[in-house]
Length: 456
Image (cartoon, rainbow, N blue to C red; front, side, top):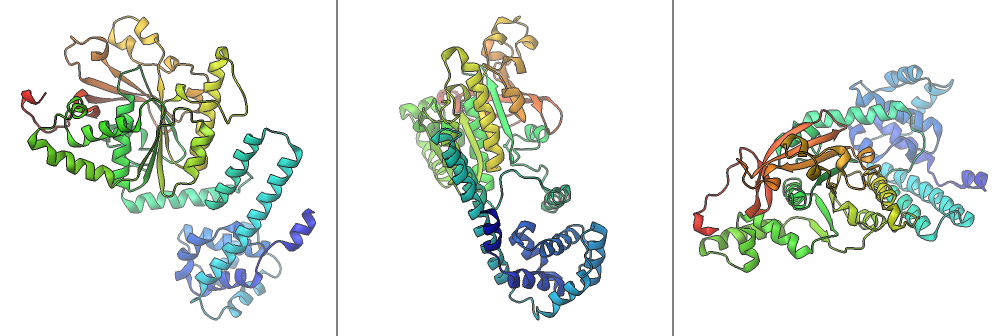
């Protein structure tokens, strides 16, 4: 069957040659082609080798012409006895590069058909073997199809040279953009400088004791990302209703006391500010699902259907269902369930290629320690039902406010975001201010709208 597939695998040799010929006779079209095509889109091995060589040369700023390409093919060890004649033939049969993008579309079409055929074969074999539950196989099948939509494949060995080339291009893009950080900005500059923003594929855990404000800081980040990047932000709230989240977002954006908003107590001079905040939030692509019984698999399935997804937020880990993991758990084995779900969240972040922020509760350990503030600060070991959470997470942030434990302290609104784990750099802490009336965290030096005391 595999031999039959190989013989009938959809491909168009003429389109492959036309794309390569156009790149050789007019190097100006190379960046456009590289945006559309990759090595694996070429079915014939010799064409893959020529394309990979040209892509490598372009990435490293080398001049591309028949002579330099042949030389690089020899350096890379992919030159054949007939390589010189073949490269010249590519140029001969391609009189102009004007239609190169049309040829590239044909190339991609056949490549996608081959990949789809291969995925269908793998799904059929998986079902025939019946090695897993139907729900697990459905999740695996959906993951394969989603990967094809994103122009990727799941698993498989990839040459280091291709990976280095991709990383080089990413670094060059960041350099050209002039961005201070590679990831999405959180709106908290000091935090961004430590964690380098919210990066694709990262699982970020924000942990605290109940009532410390982890939902609030997540919403602050969500609104900032949505407003500044224009990307879609998906929020899965397993604890609070969507209307409660919207009220918190409005209070933060309008700088109007959240308690008064809930009562409808809006003063005359605040209505315009509230309307402006509502318009700004309504213009964003923030999507909220407040279904309290969602599993990781169901969240992942919803996110696969979203275009321009930039960030996923889950509130919070210990409330999630283990459904979709292919296993069931007793109450005594809840720690294993949470560990499995944290692993699934990391896989989700990698598959969707977006940062995933998951909120998590801390155990009561900080409260049992000495009243000395240093000892009450969160530690990795305080993660409730931790299991593999700290292992799977790329970044773990613990929130701390001395005023949470002692309202009579010198500055009850002083707060800290403590970086307990950071795969991108050093750990440390960021000083913040907790503004309870707006349910938000802001940098320690931020000023906000001044109100008369009677407004509160």
